[in-house]
Length: 538
View 1 (cartoon, helix red, strand yellow):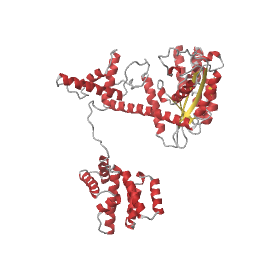
View 2 (cartoon, helix red, strand yellow):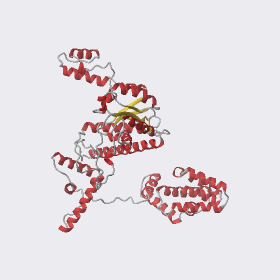
View 3 (cartoon, one colour):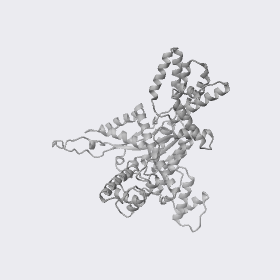
View 4 (cartoon, rainbow, N blue to C red):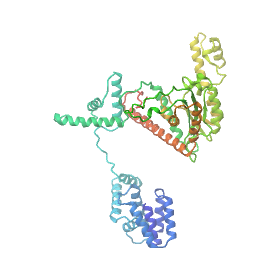
């Protein structure tokens, strides 16, 4: 904004005395001002020679700027203009009032210019740092807004969170109930909350209730929940896997654009013939004739698999063209039980090689879960569970693994399995690497890190809304195809981009929690128990 003032004021005065100064300020402030706006103002000057028009532009900018406190960038411009004028007058040996000229150029009062210079001078006199560092510090401290540290009733910082978390965990280990009141008394004992217990009984009771409400807000803000929860089995190995996953993901994202692998998310799902949203329908409890209806059992199913991609450079987010794989199991038994049985290594590898890999247009990081049929080994790989001991020992000798002559069968199998894990690449990894792609496996029990799960939720929700009496499997297929086509439209691409963005916020939350816990561990104020983590819903 200040740069625009200098530019217009120079043309308003019509003097070449400030041409170099205006150009210098424009160069200094180019990053802080919209270049398109400056170009339009320049074109406006070329199209009109009316002093009134230029004055009108200045008045418009005054209205946009208002009377707010100077920002850090505006103070830097004031200092830059003042010293440029002072330097110019020294070189030309002319007498001028730098305060007044700066005031006229920037349309700020002389008092404002004087205060900015005084602030900078005082900071320079009180510091031994170079002038540029002093300038940075004094302008940063003058940032617009109220940035003073506020008093909080509960001691702010990650230490408080981790102490409360350990307290809650310890009580759960002992099968003890935890409420906000108990957390409050824990904070009082640890001197982490401001609560005066030396007052009268009546007033003390009011203060306690107020403090407990403060504790309740603290618990909600830090993600604690109350009520029933599923048993879950989140283990340390899952947390370690998650941390490694986030580290690899962030390392890829921080690479230069040309070196970065584009992220592709792959997953599969299914929908039953009689999947409906009737349970979310409006109903009148006073209408005795509107009786609950019994929807038929699940029926036959359609299975599907596809991949989505993030936006990068000029390529938008969306579904990968040609990656949709929709089928209904031919065998009647394939419509019952776990739908994962409908996928196997053979049909998945065929789809992966023929439908997905050819449609990945650039170096890619394929992100998928740990389904068994994703990790199929080459057909030539020995299967220790189906081999006799003599055959296992022969195989170990052929691959150069040394073993004791008195080794037991179970030890020999374990030794062969270790060698396979270290030396035999999965078929899907082998084919992807040959095409210049690489893999990242999502951690177990962290489906909220896989955005395509939410895409399937959207697709199945739309399908359930269309269900009605008499729906056949043929109807399901007729409705499912348009849903996948919609994912490739502009609306579908925006939906996928929004879902990926929401998952990125979850990634940022986990990353921040890891950093906070590491800081607490470094200060030695957290027990060494990594099975926190954190408030992940199970």
